Amino acid sequence: MNNSLRVVYFPDSFLEVNGVAMTSNKLVGFARKRGYPFLCVFAGKKTEVSQDGNITFVSLKRSALSFRMDEDLKYDPLFQRHISLVQKELEKFRPDVFHITGLNDVSIMGAYLAWKMDVALVGSWHTNLHEYAASRLRTKLNFLPKKHHQSFAEFLKKRILDGAKLYYKMPQILLAPNQELIDMLSKGTGRTVRLMIRGVDTEMFSTEKRTVNDNILRFGFVGRLRAEKNVRMLADLEKALLKAGKKNFKFLIVGEGSERDFLEKNMMTAELTGFLEGEQLSEAYANMDVFIFPSETDAFGNVPQEAMASGVPALVTNQGGPKFIVKHGETGFIAENFDDFVKYSAELIDNPEKLAEMKRLSREFALSRSWDSVFEAVYQAYNEAKVFLDGKKKLRKKK
Image (cartoon, rainbow, N blue to C red; front, side, top):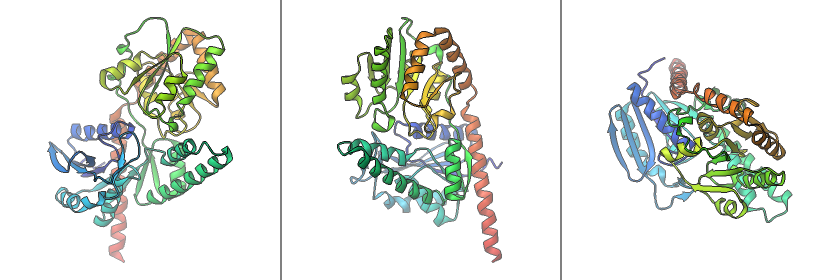
């Protein structure tokens, strides 16, 4: 593998608080630590170019016409006005490979410039945008009969997914976080797709950060309190457990979003902390006993893995990426439906020995997921994309 590859990265999230931004910053940190030449183009508070050792940062300010896509993520329809500035920086940098991360203003610029400059392109899939959009539409249209808002949502999901497949035909090599997405992208784009899992910081997230010992079992959740995360199920789960006569438990819910008000009004045992980071977040994870992740739309699921690093087994759905992280019956459970969430939660309340063993196995699993091994595989994909495009260039010259 050519470790001197000059990589330009166009993340759709970098300064925001989400899984893509966290992964993006870890990738920059990996390149910095290894001394690899690396240029990162991202949406920032102001337009400026800065240098930090072997890392070049190009921050681009979004316009006043930007609109909100999530809690702190926006899209700027005028973002491409920065193309000339970015191209000048790229010409100075002399890139070998571009890396884009999604369907947004930053990555669209990266895809266009890779084509214009005839540079190898790698695309990574981080967010199931089609699932998110469909989930939010169902919530917006729930005043309609169920069959109508379901059909609208399915139509939107299919159209967005078709557009995403077309977009992801541009890179030479694709990266995806689980086998289902690998199969979908391979079939839909005809491209080679490699696995890109996520690592976890086992020093930041650790059993040693626990500060409670009151014999109360805490069910935990960390993430955006939005419809696509299916967080109302937490209220349903609490109600079902109370109805079944279970006691001495509570819910610890970390995050912000439009569903917070609903959870505050409809849960009896929940502590809602709002957004946490740093040591406060580490402590919150470690103080949980069972992690509940009801989302059916996540492509990977960083938070269940962070929970497991904290010694907290995870209950996840059988939809999306988190089911590929959890080993059923050992580091958590994979629920087929809501009744399974109730059954497995009650089982762990009633069986502290089983819970203790799952906690141990969860931490053990997390210790095997290093970020360095993840990004070494990413650099192999960069090299593969460059070799592929170089081969095509030679064929063009022969013609």
